[in-house]
Length: 348
Image (tube, helix red, strand yellow):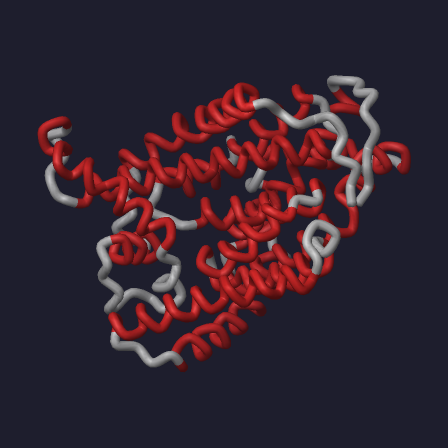
């Protein structure tokens, strides 16, 4: 188990970091929520329908991701009672629900940022370097997109952040949270399960992981069956849809090895990505951060690459690498660029 030395935070410090993350997300995302015309976006329209409890006609790819839409609907309900009086210039019933998504997504992304901050600290980064890493990942164009629009990727990023934290901190609670949330967040969360069973076994032994996975999987399957009944869909359609994603691999590979694809990958973290080049320049520089990322981080990136190939959306799925990138960025700038830290790197 990793040596979790004295980097634990008291609740005022947790709150300060959380508010920092929330400020980094909420402000830039507000114009996206307020002005973006997503009438052409099937994803956002589908999740708005799910939030209203309307499953018929919703793509089978997005129909079962109900946690964020349900939370957004819960937030939107009290807003609907007063919305027209506060914002009479915004007609229509869709605005409270859009605001609900904005609030829920900002809160979830800030939570993911808090988890990433603590993971950076556990890996040996100074508090200031961890805060800068937080800024590097939460100022991504994808953060603005995922927070401001009716999407569900905020919860999925939190799942990946918790997974990497669970391995670094040896946290059984984080392992349980991932096992319960991964599948309801997105069906592709199944790809994360073997990784967690192996690298998370020191935090929570296999029998207990399998028990929690069975519990979460049973609840997930029951939810899917209920939604299928509401939508009048056959359960076999899910398998056909999953196999259909395999057709995206050739398209994704062609796009990846193109100028446009390279630009899309670079734009995930923008010019902050250049810090990785500094960390790769020689063996001594690589020893600063590679041991902390470890095999768990490397294999997590492989799983994310699988998401990218299966989805065809290279940038949005690539943003799931934020927990690993944050650790690498924080350690690189701690030791190479701005700060000198006496903290030791603790490999997994």
